[in-house]
Image (cartoon, rainbow over all chains, first blue to last red; front, side, top):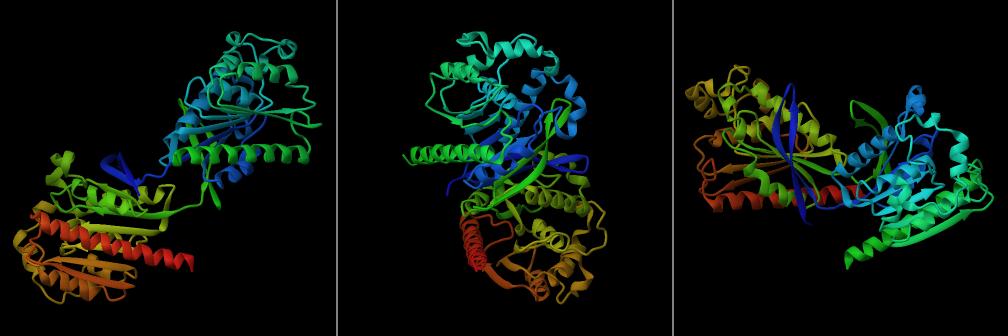
Length: 250
Length: 250
């Protein structure tokens, strides 16, 4: 078994001493799971356990303004949320057992939109987007809840948005990893044209898996729809991991 | 594969968000390797790699007053060094992949003496002591280099020291894990009576492996003596790990 080592500082009271951690050189994929607007990490914790059971290290978290941090909901901008994404990504990749070249980002709605934007800023190998939201780039620094709802809804009905006109679509257009796109059949928050815009952007991917959950609404309010999503996600992750392991064995 | 999760805080700028790390429930032994007085972590780094290759996570470090911190050599007390040991132990056991119930402490001379003392303060399953030093408890808070050399040398020639009169021997007398004791045949710093006192104290251990490196001096100045020590240590660690894995499989 090969090994790797890493210089560290060991805190002792108000000082520190130099140390070296030496560990077996076994790296596993890192998986980041991001909830949607007004969601929380609780929605992904069970799926995180299922994916971890396949030999990955998973991180799910509450975006600022959510869960126990709800007091800040009114002021959160996309810039804030993207900073949360970057911090979570960096922490995950900093985990001593995570392979920085094997990162999967899983996101729902607002979290899926952020995942697409993130993929242009950090190495991402796999991306699983459920009902990815879409916003115009403008007002990036305006509180998310202050965006004009009618304008957002109208934008989401636009077909053939030029990928270069939108951060999330532009990132998708340059993404070269594997993609899972999951649509809810009756989604009135992220309607079909949004998915079509993402599919039209994701043209340089290693693979594309596009699935529709029949009858489902945006929030997957019924257990059977949530189970269907879990099943689609877990099967796809298993296929991706099998492929990666096969490739690693040469 | 079973999984485990852990709540964490993810730092973002000057704030933090809540997260959960979920990982496969694979824990491995943690190994701490401690150099002697005027030594450094460099003496253990290769051995740390060899032990890590057997599937352990190893930590070696420079006690304060050593290596790049040599400026403080004159003032270091045993209390200081013990605090370094505790901090290193706690960091090792805090590693997400280390099994807190499977810690091995490896030490040489002053580091072996500190390891014995540590074993009374933290859970230690295995202890490998090469040429363990011995000091009277008194002057615990006095700089190590200000201890009276003649008195220390005379104490080390004493036979049948009452274990309860000495922190390191008292800890050894209550230690119930597995022990490797390695003596240098021609050691004029830690002479045979010291080893006899340790052996007389270690009477409640799960196992005892006592070995003498022929012809060797205290510092193992010849490569063949260092190789002999490495071989004794690595073989013993392998035996201990095999036993632990057999036990874990039931």
